Image (cartoon, rainbow, N blue to C red; front, side, top):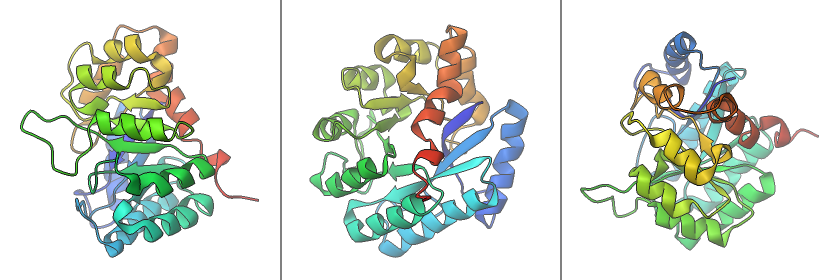
Length: 257
């Protein structure tokens, strides 16, 4: 099974379902079985409580429309703790969603995230954290790998996926290499040769996940980072789907009694 752990649903339809149909058409051509989606359609760096609700409902609509192919992450914001914890209760504990997405409303080292991370640990779900190191400078509230490292050290029982390999993947991977509760995804950057092999050499194949960041990037260009890499068959299977299937395991935290 091939699992894309990092997909967004906006820009190709008036509804979440239309966006799902658009993406699955391309995923089918490339043999991608499951898409893990997040953020909805508002894409606001500083979402209101209503934005968070709308985005989480958008993602849940997608999951319920095609549950065998779409898994969803709850959009988490420390600016709206009660709203986020309630969404985690409804959409993860009681519902079908399989983890959290933390984006750019605050740097993730901020203690305001602690209650959210603690509840994620209680629910047994991972957290996908946007990280980047931009040559032109990050947004003031945008996390770097250093921020995620600080958060992960504070919460050693939590499981994190460092999105985009930190942007500058050579530095980002080295920064988190010694922190065992941080995995990385390969998505979002140019399809440069050597990224996947580099990640495996520092982290082991068990901490590396395939992701595309579609539709900001294409499925094909990001998939090529794995299919074109010099890996063993076992390593390639872990990166393409085995690790994501283990981390984002909906049957383990569906809330069913």
